[in-house]
Image (tube, rainbow, N blue to C red):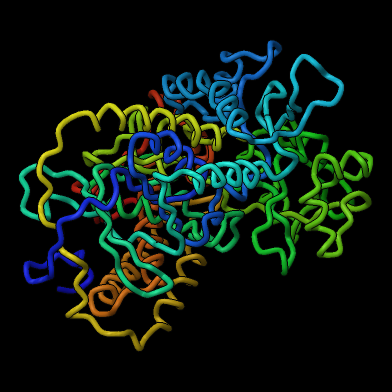
Length: 557
């Protein structure tokens, strides 16, 4: 049977094995945090699509938002999150997450994470910075490489744990469902995955499967995300019948380094938090004209302002200037940014940094509850790949790693509870079947569609949208989907094909969600509906596979 049928065939060799108690796809803060919380009780396997440090988490610079001193409060952090979310946050999810913040930060500290110290202040030992949308300094950080430091610490602990198996260069292909094996009650039994080093498809079974695969920034030409961010978990969950929510809300980070050799290097939000000013090429500051908070406005406002200035003046980029701060201050707070810019001939202690907005974060994703449960029993989703209701229409800066930590903790509690119950007999799971496919001799099609998809999404589904642009995007994506499906059916799978297949699926979900939202809210800005619809309560955009699999766009689009 061909790959498009998930490799399930009655004639394929069978095996009955429980490879893991817990199978986690993704080696960022969410995946590793969950693994460490469960490994004392269960056998855990963590899959990394590239190396173990290839994740959005590792690239996170700014820090983690949490209430950590008496000047701040949970209520204030909740309020800032709700304001940034533009009326669409699930308030219960926000309160749940923020209330658990300090506990999870101390969990990291107890595990050996070294955050930047607060020199000369005994009231709190760590430095707290402030970022756009925050009313207080509440961002704990490790200089300007917080994600890298946290992931490194978690990986060190995971490598030392005898119950954790870490597997690199493994890309998930599809979830294994009991329904497709003849069971009356559907649940997730694990997943098929391609070993990229051996070009071999593995059958990985588990009692609980967790998707912590991150976002989908590679759907766009310009992104702050690493190459692995291709929406794999979202696409797999959708194909398995799970709902997704709020896929239209793509956060474009306002300040990605603009340089031909930079390749998606992010200029942290914290740089603006410490006084960085956005300038036109002639040195004119423009953010005060857009928002009273100026450079400290939420990311959607800053990104739209930069996009507008670039288009209005016909610019390639704008500039972010921190040179009014001392060189010692800049080196102490932003050593990674300073070093990377210096490699490209930019001295940020003396000159401004050229920046452009870039796709950065997906606020929507697989619909889950506060314990990370999806619509498919046995399947959990945590981190950026999930939609918990925390972010609403726009994520508040540095709430992302916070969400990873909090929902790793809550999912661990739920999994522990569920693992106490008896497990029904697992049906025999077939190995992947490649008997009816051949090696590709048309890889150019995959390469072409890869480029075209990112161009279409950037041109038509970017920071500013319109119904006409969305309709054009959907039309092309539907044709591309047919091409990819045919290619997937006939040829042996490869890493590029798997990623393209997933990106085509996720891109259509983004477009369909954007079509359903007839207003501008948060990160979704429509030229046809430039204002919020205040005539009714704000509602999330929820797509259901059985209902929204392939509907035609509305007649007036």
